[in-house]
Image 1 (cartoon, rainbow, N blue to C red):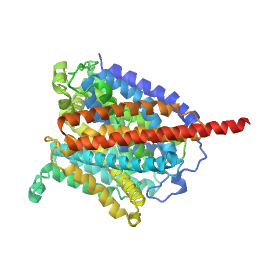
Image 2: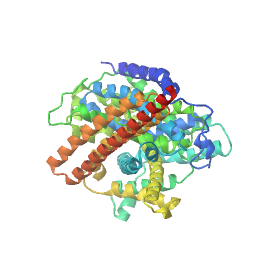
Image 3: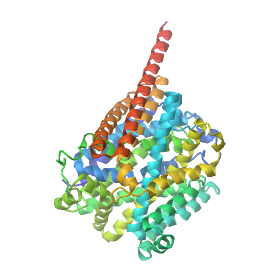
Image 4: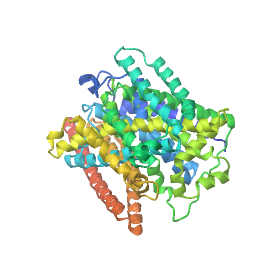
Length: 567
């Protein structure tokens, strides 16, 4: 089947989702108020609370949640065939991520910009808040550790990507000064910045940056040296005001995504590539099956709990008008879905013949280990259809992944600082509250230590061990965020079904996968993973009970209120 058909079907469905379903959510479910004074305007401090143009904020929100996950997840999931993967991307984006991301922004903005974990204490129960904060802490630690390793691997394998990845930083800071200090327009400077970024790609190829000498001098491996350098950078980046680096770089990256999607889709059309992968791949009974693992493998790109952390952690603090939430939250979800579509195309139509695809996806382990490489090679093939050297096209793909991952780390460390401060306050360590330097250092050291732990069969501890739990923890967070959103919707006397349906589906699939993993870890004798997974299973059951109790309590209060009105 021509890959072009998938582009038409997916983008057509996304257009209809935004045109009709997001409008329904805005008017009938979330009831957006253009006159509501958002936290950005109420608490404007020029650092975290900053009223921001909706187009710039969309760039920040999308690139902060994108990272490498909407590429890696779909690139692995096509192991089960292109049909289950694209079906979940379409349905999960429109009816899951759109509701989740949009709702997290609105709910947080309506509650002084509080993050979703803190809101769970207000909306569900105090116990739920404590448990939720611990889950968020674990998820952010894992995200920051894994993305740091991803960037280090790509810098080691593709040293030509270092210059373009680094040069975007001063460019973004100049644009931030221009927009915030001088009140200049952002479009033209950002487009110039994007052009400079692309000019830097062949420059990077001509002058690759190696850290072999530094690594040898300090007695570390090249990858470990890159990991430490990357985390050192995030310490400084996460302390800067959002307008100086985060917002303008995210805006450039948002434009970079549009260019990448246009180039990839154009390459598919010009080359008229056909999908080499089967619609549904029959896998061995001993292998992971797509029910339920598909729904935790494709997280970002369909629905992801990490999105609620960004939506309630940074985006809600910058939204200028509440009505902007529809554009930012729902379009951000559609952008994730579009990137997932590009990953699916690259890994099903960009790898060559069916025999080539079968080699790249001979087992789930092979698919997992080669996911990034398959995407990079697939994009290189699409660009070669446009007359661009495949090696240069592959470097373009690497720069896309690295810059997105870097933005996610900046945001992730910033969010980790917020979470650590809240945990410290709950635990009675009030001396840490407001200590930005100490909290930022802790937010960097913890995932850095995790990223440097050896083991995992050559993939590193973060990939070979804890990555196994990432998908379930991430989707558990999404389900918990939807439970907070559902209760909040009910408290406003509106129909919560739009949030409850994806909530129920997601919690069922996540719980199923957790139990299957528990059995696997027990059989393999992986006791550390068994203990961690068992803890998450208990935590999941506990929080499901808390959420159901809160929903039932809200339903009873609503019924009592209606009965009083009738009397």
